Amino acid sequence: MARKKELRRPAARRTAVTPAGLRTRAALLDAGMAVAERDGLAGLSVNTVVAHAKVAKGTFYVHFADRAAFLDALHARFYENVGETIAAAVRDLPLGAERLARGMEAYLDACLAHRAVKALLLEMRSEAHVTAAIEARTLLFAKLVEPNLAAMRWPDAEVAARLVVAMTSEAALLELDARKRRPAVRRALRQLIEQQRTAAR
Amino acid sequence: MARKKELRRPAARRTAVTPAGLRTRAALLDAGMAVAERDGLAGLSVNTVVAHAKVAKGTFYVHFADRAAFLDALHARFYENVGETIAAAVRDLPLGAERLARGMEAYLDACLAHRAVKALLLEMRSEAHVTAAIEARTLLFAKLVEPNLAAMRWPDAEVAARLVVAMTSEAALLELDARKRRPAVRRALRQLIEQQRTAAR
DNA sequence: TGTACATCAGTGAACGCGCGTTCACTGATGTAC
DNA sequence: TGTACATCAGTGAACGCGCGTTCACTGATGTAC
Image 1 (tube, rainbow over the protein chains, first blue to last red):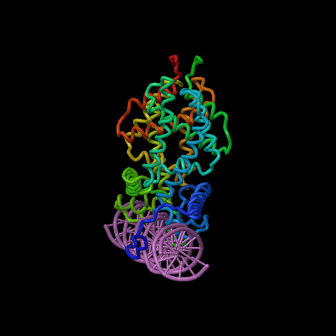
Image 2 (cartoon, rainbow over the protein chains, first blue to last red):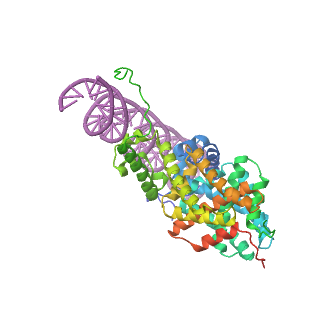
Image 3 (cartoon, rainbow over the protein chains, first blue to last red):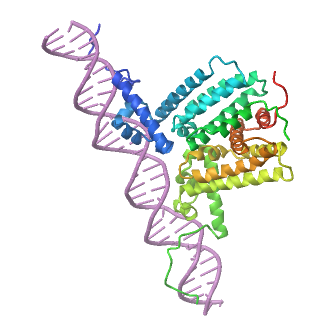
């Protein structure tokens, strides 16, 4: 039953299965992060990535269907990491302002750890071909924020969550420019989401 | 004294002075908006712009030093218009929550009127060569927001203003997707900037 | 243990394409005398 | 009014370049008998 010689399918190559293959794939993604950090999304061509990873151009297409798939994989990997970090930070906290604030801080810390984040966060939203997947992942973050706002009895929690996510992204960019935590940014962020009880004026 | 024949300077061409010239320049910018609306920044090549404006490729370079200068002019023209609209809307209002809220609504309305705004608002932040000017204009908006927050006695008004601007941009994008005003978006926005006095829970 | 073959990752030359930019030129309009 | 010329916007063919993608091939590793 085994040992057929004929019928070699054109065999659309899937993701790597070999340890060496997996390593190469990871190396390409790592190179992508390094290039994004240096030159942003605009500099993230197949050429620069394979040059940085020191593999042949053809190897790129062994692991990714095309450039868009690569960008998507890059974005996905980053957001999975960040998502896990946040989940760990807020685990066991009840829904509400404190959980939300802690999650946001964890997010900011995670972003600070990856200088390529600007490309991933900001610039990828404009790459036409990848947009759908990016949007989905942003929406997922909003869905994590929303129940906290709901628990705080915010009206319009759904759209408010999206605004909060956008605000937090901007905060991440501000800290990224400074290359370090900016307490004023974090205070302002907390201020914006917490019920402000002090009387104005 | 007049009538010199020699000494024709290579004469780096400046902006158009002729009525016809000014019209062509405006037509190129209009074409830019139309293309940005249809295909986003990625589709905004010199080729597509001149094709849409129905002028020769060379004409583009009569009016703009290069593609980056064109994008900058596009962005500048849009933000000047929006800026004037906002200024008109908040004129005579004292600094504070009401003026801020009115300004934001005027901004959202202005964005809704230009479907190319997504490209201008979001995608231009990633075009490496133009970034500086874009940043400056965003910062200018933040500077308009800031005194209102200060009047409301917000701490960290400076960074808070940037977060508010980012949030408002996101709100504009949400409405742009819907192609119409979204009351929930505007309510959420107001909620976020106004001192919230109702007790939670 | 040896042999034949399947399976996979990796290679790099070659491709066509659309891009931004240049430049020698045309032609209309304005101006001096 | 006529003529000579300067000034400007506009033209489009031509350029070199880097891009994403393809493909026939190599070579290492695994597996069946």
